[in-house]
Length: 331
Image (cartoon, rainbow, N blue to C red; front, side):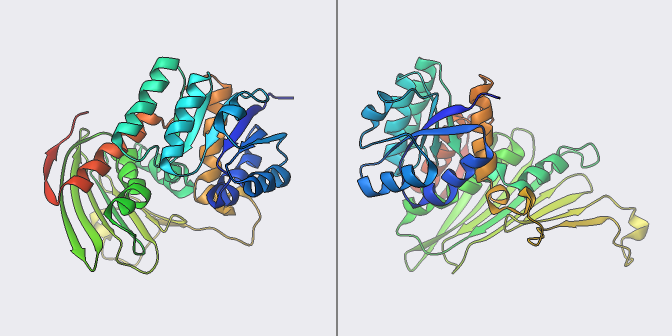
C-alpha cells in the first residue's frame, strides 16, 4: 500500500469544511489531527472526517501525534503563525490565500521556509482549476505559438473595503496573470471609486513579452470571471471557470465562411459522475491538495510556493497604496 501523508489541519471553519476537507479524499492523505479555538467546530470536523485527535492550540497539535505536514485555513494572520510554527517544527505546510495580512508577513513565511529548508505552498486554487490547466496546456502547445496577450475580467459583489477586495478577491487574478505570462516586468493601472466600491483597469507586460489586461471590480451582484489567452493565430477562452472555448488557426480565405470546424467547446456534463464534472476539480481545490500531498511525498517543492505568495502580495500592496501610475517590477 502506498504511503499516505499524515496531516494536521489548523482552522476548522466553513471554508475548510466545504472545500479543503472534502478535497482530502482525492489525495494520499490521512487526517491525523485538527486544531481550532472553537471546540464545537473542531470536534465536528474530527467526527465527520475521521481525525484521531483535536487540539485548541497550534503548539499542542504540533506536540501531539506525529505529522508529516500541516494545512492552515483561517484568517491571514493564522496562516502566517501556523506556517512559521509548522516549519520551525520541521514540517511542510499548505496555507490558504492570502498567506498573511501583508507583504511583511508573507516575507516572514518565506524566511522561515528558507531557514528550515521546508516548503510552504499557497492555496492559489485557480492555477489548478481544470479549465485553466487545460487552457495553459493549449497555450504552451506548438500550434498556439507565443502567448501574445492575456485578458482577464474578474468582477464580483461589494467588499467591506479596498484592502479586503484586494487581499481576498483580486489576489486570485493577480496570481493568474503570472500563471499564464510569467513574471511581470511593468504594470500600469487606474483605480476608480463609486459608492465606496472599486474598479481597477490594469495593463502589464511580462518579461516574456506577453501583454496583459485586467479589469477587476467590486461593483457587480455576482462573480463573473472571463479569461482570454491569445497566441499567434489561436485563442483560448475560459468563462466562469467551467467553460473552455478553443479557436484554432484558420486560413484567411475561410475567415468569412460559416465553417466552424476550428472551434472546440468544452463544458461540464453534470449528468456524468466523474472527476471532470466535480466542482472540487473544476474549481481547483482537489488539484491543489493533490499537488501538495504529492510534492511532500516526493520530497520536492510544490509547483506554487510562498515565493508566489510573496509576489502576489507585492502586487496587492502596489494596488492598495496607489490610485494610478506606471511601476517597474523586479523579476
